[in-house]
Image (tube, rainbow, N blue to C red; front, top):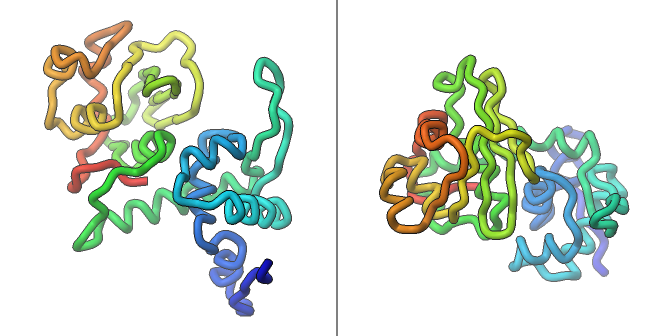
Length: 222
């Protein structure tokens, strides 16, 4: 195996790139921001990375203190990779890169490959002015995946898993969710097409797009 490359530069930015700047590094971080994942889950959500490269990046992250491996408790007691407290501090870096990329003259035009990446994109779209002082809790179901999309006192909270006492739970797919949040498809149209189901308050579901700003290209960005 080739030795890990280094910039050999004392600048903190260069050191950060030594730690997470190798190919696939930041995308692996992105996939762990909503919680731990098994190696097989990471492979499924990052189909372009080889098992060898993924294993190498994870080993590097563990050595650097960016991530660790632990056994999750029942009912799913398996080994998973998880960001450390320090590793989670990369989250604003990931989102800032996404916002910066969306200002490109030629922004990305193909959708992210993982559901987690699309859900994390809600941070890029979130409108804190519209959400000021509001508290509303949504469950989001995309296929067999469950997410919490909650605004608490104007702050957006995202996580995997079920929401306790949600105002509404929305079952849909990523293209329909994006079209709904970008106001290019109405709630009634999405329901009539059978591409969205709502459990709970229909009024709360109708207010969801008001919490987000449409982005100027046609897909969510990771």
